[in-house]
Length: 108
Image (cartoon, rainbow, N blue to C red; front, side, top):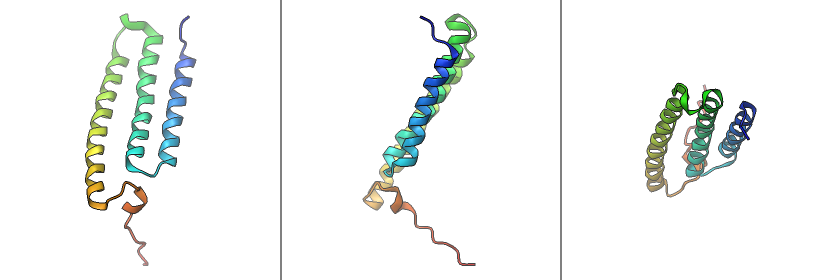
């Protein structure tokens, strides 16, 4: 059984929707970071899947290269984000993102 472009698009869309729901519904910083990684994973699935559907593994590897670059960017984002969240955790004693907002409205 072969996988078609519609199935790749549906899978990528479902993974993207899960990540978007996580971004909207989560309040802790690690949850937001994880949801953002899931969003990026949806694009990796789309790039690799559409490349596999188009030409298989013997065709030009542009999709795989873009997917690999996106995975590297995602890994770097997670490492930097985790370091920032750990720093915020030490300073604020909480992971709730509502506590990080200290901006007051300018009454001009």
